Amino acid sequence: MIQALWAKLWPYLAAIGAAFAAVLAIRQSGKAAGRQETRQEINEAEARARKEAQDVESETAAMDDDSIDAAMARWVRGNKR
Image (cartoon, rainbow, N blue to C red; front, side, top):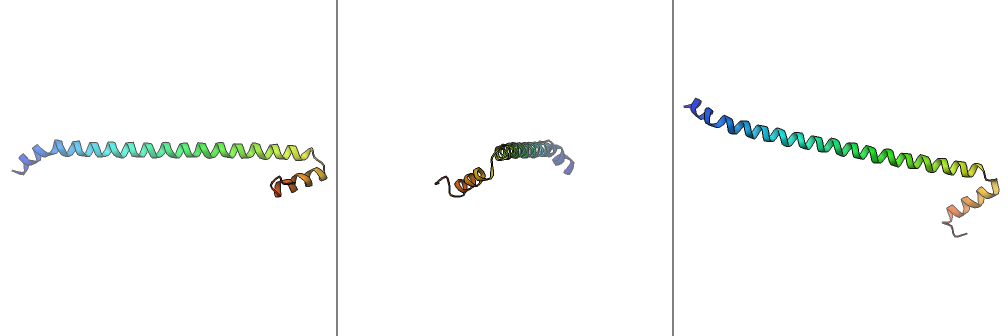
């Protein structure tokens, strides 16, 4: 009796297990892709920040102290001077 019931149910149980495994695999691949996309965005933002810092450094290296003081005063006051 149990063998007959098992013979009828195992294909359905196998299909349910396969569907569950497929859903988990798809979910994991989506999470991995999301993490990779986030890492890429962070790397791009860091690269932009480094470029901006280099630009500011090269710009201020060419300025004298009075020019730097004036630029900092404008920056602190929000360009209102």
